Image 1 (cartoon, rainbow, N blue to C red):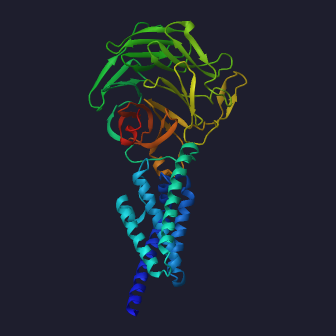
Image 2: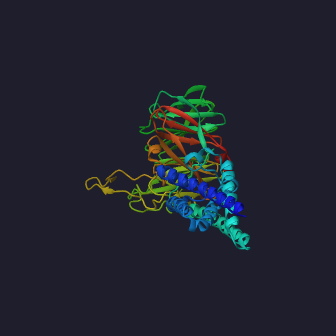
Image 3: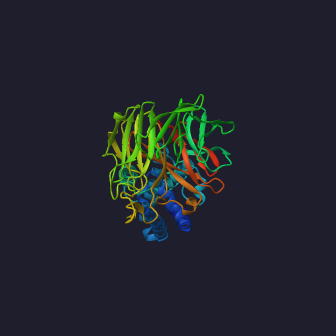
Amino acid sequence: MRLNTQIQNLFLEFICFLYILLFVYAAVSKLMDFENFVAQLGQSPLLSPFADYVSFGVIITEFTIAILLSIPKLRYFALWGAVSLMVLFSTYIVIILNFSSFVPCSCGGILEKLGWTEHLIFNAVFVVLGVGAILLKSRTNRILIKLSILILLSISIIVGLFLFSEDIMQKENPFIRRFPQGTAAKVAGTDLKNISYYVAGTEKNKIYLANRLAPLQILEMDTDLKNKRHYTIQLDREDFKFQAVEVRISPPYFYVFDGTVPVIYRGMISDWKAKVISEKKYYFSDIIFMNPELISFRTQKPYTGENIIGIAKGNDSLGIKYNPLVLQKQMDGIFDTDGTMQYSEALHKLVYTYYYRNEYIIMNENLTVAQRGNTIDTTTKAKLKVVKMKQSGDTKLGAPPYMVNRHTTISKNLLFVNSLLRGKYESAAVWKNATAVDVYDISKQTYVLSFYVYDEEGFRMKNFFATDAAIYIISGHYLLKYGYGERIQSKFQ
């Protein structure tokens, strides 16, 4: 009898020693790399909104249980806490592997080298050891019922956090980006030898680049970025005082335009010859060619200069209509409503994204506002210093603007936004060499995920164009191709 008791005590001592070793090591590892630990929690599908609290809570709990396990009189109660904590960790992994939209990085220390499945097995072993120790030390017949309640309660806590976290991320996102694996990565690149190129459009297996310094020169490349051809656009008239000529390609047509003149040419990419289709009917600062007979543009109201969205149907001056309700003024109606305009041919929707606040507007082709969505940052009001010049009456910015969303591009139902703001739990070191692209599903008005576009030879991304197969990026004088992973491909409709 005495021998059995000694063996049981040795077994209990051994299990408690293992738990103390595990919790002390885990807590110290987290403290030594605390910033990374918090960042990893910030990427968790379950714990993102609670990362600040959980990061301290887990470390304190691990140290506390380890101390209590070292005190013989409190060891029994500490074992209950240890088993509960390991059940929490195990349930977290089960949800990550089976119910989460993505799988984040593992925890720190030596355990980081374990995969999630191996980590689950490791935790399960400690749960079994802990339960065995409690059963040996217990003197009540109802111990199994109490253990079952403890395990169910621990599981319920994690499930509740998972459901609550998803609701917060979609409805009250406190500017936490998610960077799951399998989003987008560089698969090809080429040196254009010129920093003036921008992506003008795509067609099947072709990419068309235009040159701001030589606006009538077109560079055609295949999607592997290997083969190239050069074309020269021929205009039927050149008697305009061009200031800012741009090219937009929407196969089988291409368009040449200058909103400051204003004039619009159209031609076929089969011969690269263009004719004037609109001359001095309306000025514009941005334009979208939805189809050969329907154009959307941004212009300014007379007298006030405030931005307004309009549409032009065909070549009929009477077909020009405006909707003053699309853009909502916060300060001056000029800078605070500035932004980018994109068109989803698949959904027949226009999308306008503000530069200086966290909002995008989804419109039908007749400019009726369908929905207003929000980007994940928290800038609801434009942070601008607008001044009016007394002599000229012009409105100008009196300080550098606080830009939120710089570039946008769209493919089908996915809106890609190049954000200039660093989110919560994101590394400052990464932001020195990369820029973030946030992806939104405009059909559901939800944030999907984010990925980084890393600087190419010190050049930051300055222009990009999305298709349903890849996203093409201009960084300095480089053209890059980022291929989509399963996480993005599965979101296309």
